Length: 244
Image 1 (cartoon, rainbow, N blue to C red):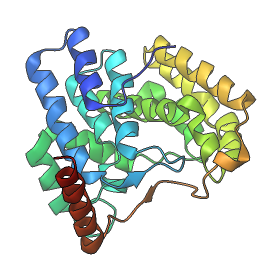
Image 2: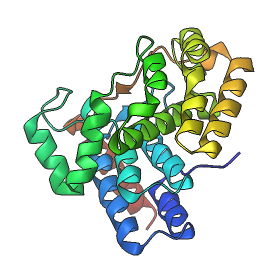
Image 3: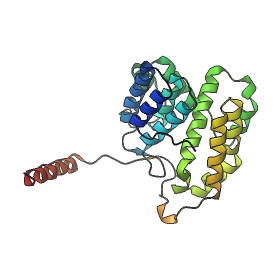
Image 4: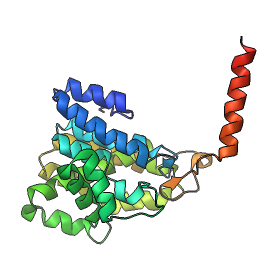
């Protein structure tokens, strides 16, 4: 299976290898710089850094040769649901949208906002599949980002390391099984094959219970206090002084 990027540097290399223009790579780089700030100290329920998940989602889209705005939106797909803008609360707001527009432009921000608005749960996935013939080009882009997110979330058995592994696995079997069909309909057979193979691997695998974290979803680890940071800096200074 294709090995997707988990770091910004590998993502930039991937884009270059795939023939994306330097301006496009630069635009993705600007999206990464915003993601770097928004997802600081945020982790998936498995303990995986959220930033790696965001980069992985963008990498999946790059492997499909998606347009640059779609790749950048993949990097920032969770900006409004998991990003920290400095006010401690989640959701879309005009100030947040303005900040994202300044960083990555109107089209990328609009895709991120539309992604946030997409109702994606057990009660809607079937309806989305059934209405594929009526969706607009923008809705196609948003759905492609959503499917890339689902693939990235399940790679490396990611959902099995969370505190609700069996519930997530059952949800995958009963509802996310439609993802491959939707990917094929969107003209992304490689994504459909990757989703099918990954879901089959997750369905059959087991991970040690001791590695399953208690968190059910994404979580934030508070940064170290000022006093802790000061002690770390002092200890580093003493260590360097002793090596002289």
